[in-house]
Length: 257
Image 1 (cartoon, rainbow, N blue to C red):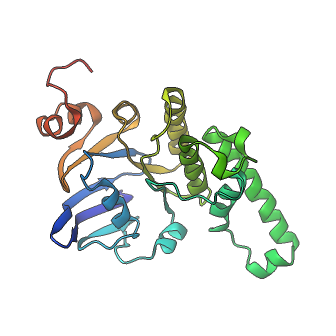
Image 2 (cartoon, one colour; image 1 turned 180 degrees about the horizontal axis):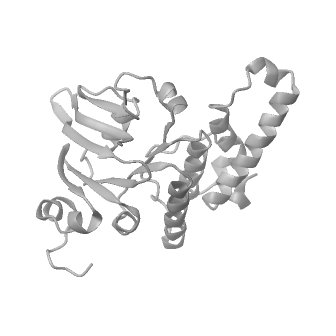
């Protein structure tokens, strides 16, 4: 079964074709990477899949349902979450409170029950707080739970955005440049966090420039160049594809892996 099915996705801005007839599948329980040079259309692809932008042509199906015209909020409730290339956090509140905002997107307690502090609302709030702390621990931010989001360095802000996205309990998680700003040690920890996220049942699609990370964690890779898909497959095959070498990786065939 296919969790995400993208068919013929095209996005034209005036005279510029940012995406040109892109198709691929994402299977449950996998980590799939989208790579390509700057301007390849990677973030545009994410925006069209998550409905933060409208594709000019093509379709997107999630769990077999056509979501090409769905609202982003509907996709969150259906089990799709994403992060952004530029972090979008609430800087005036703590890391923990930022994660809780993600949990509230899928809680069942109504506003009146929450306002009246009814037992059901208090119980759900307590469980949400426990889960938020667990997610912060998963991405390595537990010690920063009470730190203001605006006081976190750039790399840790990206990890916080991932924890917040996970709080909505997604079955499909789209990560846009998650390792940007992380040092080597943090990147290694993040790779382990990706495995934990997958092992807990989330399917992951990641746009990333860190080729070491991509080659380590990905089951499959899609390569874009100027809006066109030029390759798709397992990391080892993609790494040696002549079109990919020319467009992006900058390696010579036969170089040591």
